[in-house]
Amino acid sequence: MELVRIVSFGEGMIEERADGSFGWGGDAVNVAVYLARQGAAPALMSGMGVDGESEAVTAAWAGEGIDVTRVLRDPGRRAGSYRIAVGEGGERRFAYDRAASAARAFFSRPEAEAVLAWAASADILILSGITLSIYTASERAWIVELAASVRRRGGKVAFDPNYRPAGWPSREAAWAAVEAIAPYISLALPSLEDHLGLKGDAEPEAVTAAWLGLGAEEAVVTLGASGAFAARAGQTAFAEAASVEALVDTTGAGDAFDAAYIAARLVHAEPMAAALAHATALAAETTAWPGAIAPAHVGRRRLG
Image 1 (cartoon, rainbow, N blue to C red):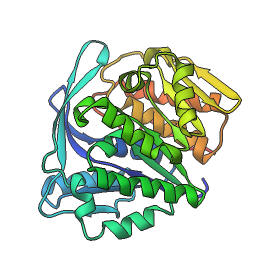
Image 2: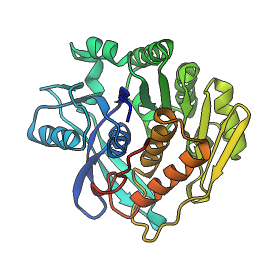
Image 3: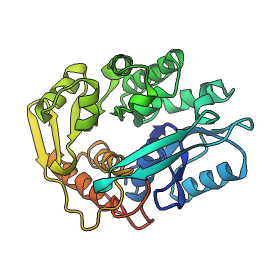
């Protein structure tokens, strides 16, 4: 695989699964893990504490092949956490404890400015609405400028809105944050559910049209059990959802989809239809296990 600098920015967290076991997750981390499992070499830009739990989790990320040298360490904070409750059909609800999250204090660290300057030279920058939601308006402006810098240098910006209403004062506030960064998005990766919550569009064609209208070069909307639809100027593609033999937990499935699609399209320029098929297959495969991250053999594929 050609060496590509991939930077995923967001919060890594301790995970308490529905079966009582523990792990770790967070959308930026999940995407990085599945990219690494496909032969990429992603870097995670985040914050963590220096306590035992933080050290163990950061070491686990490194063990997955993620570059953790830009995970800023904060002795006064720790990792945030979340608890998963799984309902019928593997659908999940989350309860968060992130008041003391080190990732939330990323911009207050003295090293942050240098790390942001480093990230501006990324070939692929990966962001999400959850990442936007944990920062203040002035800090989000730094993220927008980072995305703009990546695009000016010829890089790509992948963005999943990952809309979680609890993270925003209103859906209008969330959409305003999206609109601020939209001119710099290369690849938009909304789910139909998230876009419905943000804007109300219910048809895949309308959702992708909305994101292309905001400035994205390409938009992919995941449709749950109905598959996924992708569009760019003059082109569309659709993939049925992959079959699932034993649905346990859908946590992280969307992030696995994002990683697979980013690897196929932005790293290797595979056709949209092939990328969708790969992404839906990986997303389905991850739902057979509890928690955000499936066992180490899941998602191993060398592209290119």
